[in-house]
Amino acid sequence: MYYRRTLTDAQINRELLDVVLRTPMWWVIIVSILGLIVAGAASAFGFMMNQGLGVTGLQQPIFWGFFITNFIFWVGISHAGVMISAILRLSQAEWRRPMVRAAETMTVFALMTSLLQPLIHAGRPWRIFYWVFPYDWARGIWPDVRSPLVWDPTAIITYLTSSTLFVYTALIPDLAIIRDRSTGWRRTVYGILALGWHGNPRQWKLQGIAGILLSALILPVFVSVHSIVSWDFGVSLVPSWHVTVFAPYFVIGAVHSGVSAVVTLMILMRKLYKLENFIWEEHIDAVARLLIVVATAWLFFFWLDLVFALWLREEQEMTVWHLRLFEPPWSWLFLVFIVFSYIIPVPLWMFRRVRRSFTWMLWTSLMVNVGMFLERLIIIVPALMRKGPWTFTYDTYRPSAVEVTLIVGSIALVVLLLMLFSKFFPLIPIWEEKEGQKLIDDVRVGDRVIPALVKEH
Amino acid sequence: MANTKLMGLFQDPEQAAGAMTKLKEDGFPVEDLDVYSGSPFPEGSFGEHEPEMRLFMFPLVGALVGFAIGLLWTAGTQISYPLVTGGKPLLSIPPMTIIMYENTMLGAIIFTVLGVLFESRLPRRNLGLYDDRITEGYIGVIVDCPEERASAAESALQSAGAEEIKKEEG
Image (cartoon, rainbow over all chains, first blue to last red; front, side, top):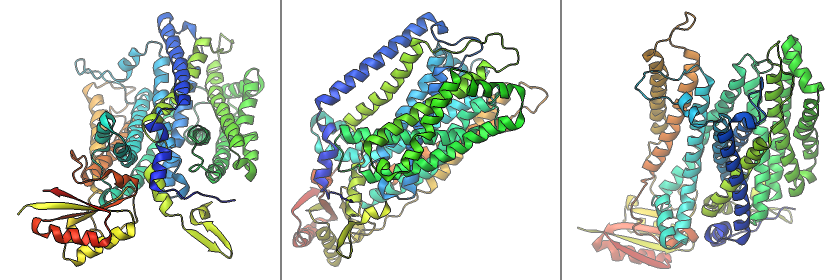
């Protein structure tokens, strides 16, 4: 049943600025809980800095564990945000409207969190700046541009800057809306942020062009960033990492986990912020159909990765795959990963009833991200466990309580940042919703009246 | 002769479009008319002046600047501390292209945003003649005219159905 309420501009302002203009108690409670978790994680990090990396499960020969897994995981999550927004903006898909802002914002906060992970992983984070940015000009010795340690920050800082500018540019008209609804110091602050926006045809035209132009520019950056992250692995000589397929495999994996995270975010937003008038079953259905395609493409690249190893039959490569597939606990984790990432969710998404159920979609999208976290862990750790023919320590990697606390803290941090963002800025672009309302024309087919926008679904 | 600005506030976009037509018929040049709205309308809905823009120059210039910085950074740091490895050429071009590519795109994106702001004539310190109701769905029709034509503009806005007319001395 297609149903859409026609809303006036004033109603849209009221509903989408509800949390911005007042502070509900549930928001305070959730933010306080998340703040406590983040504070706990910060304490764990302080403890780790004080005691050294010995408090983690890292040991010879496994020096990349949960933190690097988490780095790849959050870079991956960040990808779909801008990707989905840019593709939908470029193709002028009507159903983009409620999801673009939240997706873009998630990109920014996930990227910030991902950037923290190598700093945490270093144990003594100030040294990372010394390795990557020793541009002191005095000694005349520079970082090696041939090192992925230089490519990575370059790519991620490019993506973070671009995504932040992308979010801000589209936010300007909404900042003017909040400015006009505020008084006192809030009006001054939003007035400064809105840059004196009036909303004349010239500004609206440029806003439209900016959306398309920035989308076109940011899409190649999105592809490059996760490719470069994959080369952290690909350019090494570690068995099962030194594979040419890694760049597209990482990119499509990032899209799979990121789009699933967008689904989770939209469903939670709808429930918490009472956005039933803006996020409908049709939106989730559309993203779920996209997910089927993305997940299947990802499965193909995963299969290629495995086939390349089997094809070569190189001894060290086979040893790593044997560990991943047949030796506990990795074989169990592998099973959970493949079942959660593909075998359960994708067949379920084939059913329209599942695609249009917020409950089903919430759980299946969460399941994908549990699976995709495990995927990154399985890529990293077993390969390091058997990276050389003479491995003297055959012990496995066991993440410590400090590492687990920091992982939970990173999830809480992203959610906390999103909650704080939602207190000051609308999570759904108000001006885009208003523009969408103008396009609601009833189409008469016989004795039926169908909203024109729904034709896209 | 001092100019004055008038703004007619309309609840109905059709009335605002009618006001624009009336003002043009009354001899007010289209370049002196403007429309403020809380959300975008299809281009030309109000018969407004077609803005001339050069936005597409900005990403191109930004890309060139970014590329140049990338080249200077990667080549410059390798040349300034020459360390020959395995008898290979000093400048390692494949990894240089990775950084140069990122810088090129970053330059293009930063300049695009600057271009959007510049072409939108932002930032502006003062809002000038404006009304908060515009972001509630009202349409503001702005006329910039010499003082002696203010009453003609006011009556054109009034006859088109303006709910309120505001005036700003220029």
